[in-house]
Structure formats: structure tokens, C-alpha cells
Image 1 (tube, one colour):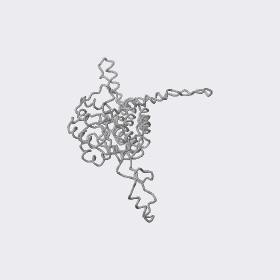
Image 2 (tube, helix red, strand yellow; image 1 turned 30 degrees about the horizontal axis):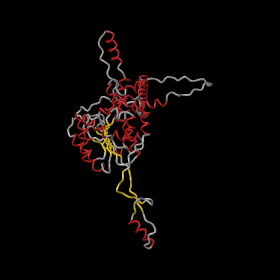
Image 3 (cartoon, one colour; image 1 turned 45 degrees about the vertical axis):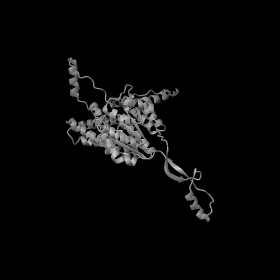
Image 4 (cartoon, one colour; image 1 turned 30 degrees about the vertical axis):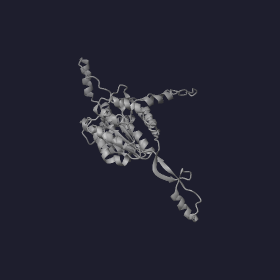
Length: 398
């Protein structure tokens, strides 16, 4: 019994290390909790073992899919493997291989043991010049879906260094400025009272300029699950770099995560987001989410030349119901509406679905968002007017 318990503890330890190498935050406390949880369930039931490990090792909803792949790969059924091998030897037909999951590549890399590097002699001096610039350029154009665990970590580091500029807008407020272009008669008279009515200096003011509000509506449905986690790192960096940034996530319902993303620590911020969002990787109801935003949040957030970033692929489970009306109201309420669609990474993309055709007439810009280069292009475009000709082409196609 002790030997079996020790072997089980080692297997749990190796499984936790596999998850950690794949990019999941699994610490020693979670590993000990998993070992204790397995003593309370029936080890003969695969479902109970999976539930116990999932409850103790996983803290975010977006990590559940990767955990399922890791669990099926690590805790294999030996009888099923022997049956498949026997069927292949007898000439039976085996099912066709399924398409590799998004996390399969990272798990395959995490399961491999790193090779021992050759130590150069003491008198041999080596300089590593392995195309560092080319590797960084490759990362800029790599699709988020095809990134490994190391690529995603490097992409998150690049995202944290991005700076989001927006043209500052003149407001109605004024502030005292000795070199201001306009005279302030009221302040001048108030100062003259201290000098017995003598005007010794004319006070001046200047209009206050500040960047417009930025509102982000991000789709977290199943079709966007491969891009939403990385885009959240971009939104977290933007929310902590400037003020008046509001972020909403929507799938089957709309959730405001503005307060959660204001936390400086990204790990804590994403944990708060995971606890606040109940419909991650579910269906999509774009029209219903936009209707709720227009009814509750639009009036208080879309003033002073607000810019709206709508991040979605436009695939709505409700078709185009209520989409044209809500998109038109959203477009008229903001100064600039930019639609970021990962489907634009395909050169042969055409607006064929009902949701995309209903949304395109009410958009100022239609841009891709699938890699670091697209994010940099978005940042550059936010400080200059949109291209009218490009949108005219998409509107004609819709």
C-alpha cells in the first residue's frame, strides 16, 4: 500500500510539473492539495480522479481545455492502447487522426525532456549569434493560435512593452497657465483686489487636453477562445498605462471587468476576471450584448470623443437579430468604432455570415487581430484617421 501511495504521489508530482512547463500556474501548495484530494475519491473512477485534480490544480476557466489535453495524455488507459495496437495488427481500420488541439503543441514540448547542452572547453570562447533579430521578427508575424508556450511567454512580454497613443482632444475645462493663449478676466480682477485695484498682471488660461475614453468590447466565446487570453494581456497593459479605459467581455452575456483589470499584478487581475466571467468559451449573442451596453453603459462612457474597439469574429448564434439597430446606435454614440476580427488573417476572407454583413455598414475601421504585428498596426492607426477607401470596399462586399 505504501509503495502504491508513493508511486501515485510521484505521478501527481510529474503531472503538476507537466502543467507548469506548459504554462499553467501550478505551485507546491496545489500539488499537495491534489495528493490529498486523491485520497478522498475512488481511484478506480477516472471521472472522479479528473475532477479532483481539476479542482485542486486549475484556478482559471481558460486553463480547463489545456488541462483536459494534459490529463488524457498523461493518465493514459493501457488497456485501450493495447486494444488499439491489436486492432491495427489484425488489419482493422483505425479512426482518422483528429486535428491537433491548440494546446497540443505546448504539451508535446513540455513533455519532452530538455537535452543536455554540450559544455565547451575552458579555452574555447563561443559567441551566440543565432539570428536574434530574425527570431523576433518571426514572433511578430506568428499567429497566436500557432504559438508554443515559450512563444506565448515572449509575446506577453512584448505586449507589456506596447504603448497605446491616442490624439488628445480639447475639453471645455480650462487651467491657469501664465503662458496661455487666452486671458482670464475674472482671475485678473480677483488678483487686482489684492493690490488695491491695480492690475499688475493679466492672468491667462489654456484649455485642458486629454486623450479620449477608450471602450473595449471583447468576445470570449468558443470561437474566440484561442485569442481572448492573449488579448486580455494587451488590455491589461492598456488599462494600467492610461486612464479612462473601460473593458467589457461578452459571450452569452455582458460583463464589465474594468475594475478587475486595474490591478497592477496581471496574475491577480486575471484571477479576478476568471471569477467574474461566468460564460467563458460558450456561445455568442452579439446583438443582446450590444443592446445591454447601449442601454446601461453607453451614455456614461461614450462621451468626449470616445473610441470603441469591438473584438469579435462576428459569428453570432442568434444570426443577425437586433444587430443592425444596436450597431447603428453604438456607431452614432462614439467618435470612432474599430472592429478587430481574427478571421481577417485569411487572405480569402469574405463577409458571408449574417452577423458580419449586418455589422460592417456601421464600422469605421475593419482590422485583423491575430499576431503582434496586427496589434502594432492597431496602435499606429489609433493616432491617425481611418482609411475610408478600405471600409468602402468591405461595405460594398457586404
